[in-house]
Image 1 (cartoon, helix red, strand yellow):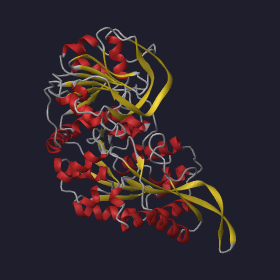
Image 2 (image 1 turned 135 degrees about the horizontal axis):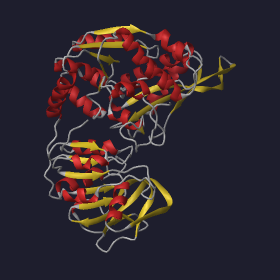
Image 3 (image 1 turned 90 degrees about the vertical axis):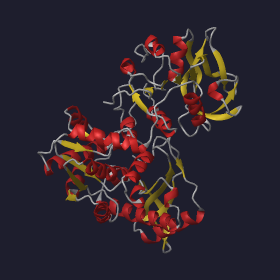
Image 4 (image 1 turned 90 degrees about the horizontal axis):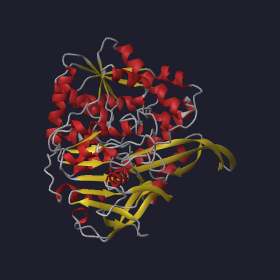
Length: 509
């Protein structure tokens, strides 16, 4: 459990999928921030500012999450309510909240209506991102409307020189001047804030690891990805007794095991390689439901680890915060998007027993890369594209078979090599090929073919909470498509996925 620190920005989590993203933005601006459930408000130690996040609930629900308003105001620090947080503050200040005519989801226009610290230097009109169904109404006499949408509906309110509410989400990149608005809140309202930098944070993490581990032995699951590589090196630097174990679950990419072995040799962390591919694939035989796949894979990972070293007292995971929030395990208010392999029931049981170590669980991918750079990890390892814990299982919708995996590996290898050859690889945050569970009619060698389709995906993202597809040069797409169609047996159609997150997720399952 995170312990409050003086001068931090305390973000009260009302269950928004973007709650931790607010924390990330604040740290990006150079200030310490942590996420807390609203009921921990009274435990805060002299916070520098407080932000109430958005959330999926309605303030009119009988069990709607609340805030201890007298305690909130007693801190006498700047307060900002975001979306649900604004609606809650409006009620506390004597206003009401009512259902909107329609749900607002997506881009909207922000029209600044009054001068104030929050909008200093902000354009009179700019794009913001909305995600709500209720709206503030019957504002109290002392409530000041400082911005509206293009229909003149209030979307930003002010109750004092240090208390504001905004209906939109400044933390997402779709709000074009959102970061500037957050900066104004933190720097133009008299807040006394603690600074944040990744080197100091690394030292804090090492101290926490040493204190939590004590003299116990740690099993560290490694995949070769950025997260587990940084975790393994971090544990080594902390001086704890660690065994780094790589499990080949049969769902890896082409030549993955050999590449991972070479990478860990370079960073100086010895790893044990366990081939459990037959065991995983047998357990997945006939399974088509995405959630069931994830549960099976996550539970079996733990079983394999404990089978290899059943006397080890701690399991270390490279879990990042997007894994936590999408699995709805940061608090009971959040809505579950999908179960991540490191958030299945067995993992949560082990966490309750104090047997899981997750030093990176507060961080996003870019912060982990910055942390890795301070640890001296090579650039190529830090900028390797993310690879999901369930591996190719979430890139082969439907039942998993050896044939489907072979097709997917071959196509994926061609796609990634083409991105590297064309110089596009590091421009892309994550890319992969997925095998679609359909067959299509085509023509090969002047004859009818009835074969499968491959979907290519390439996205940019800062945090995995939102993502946009990459507008790659046509010649890159053409080259990858031609190579796949000419060399991957069983494929006669190649598609390029141009879906954003939301509403789609990055992976297919």
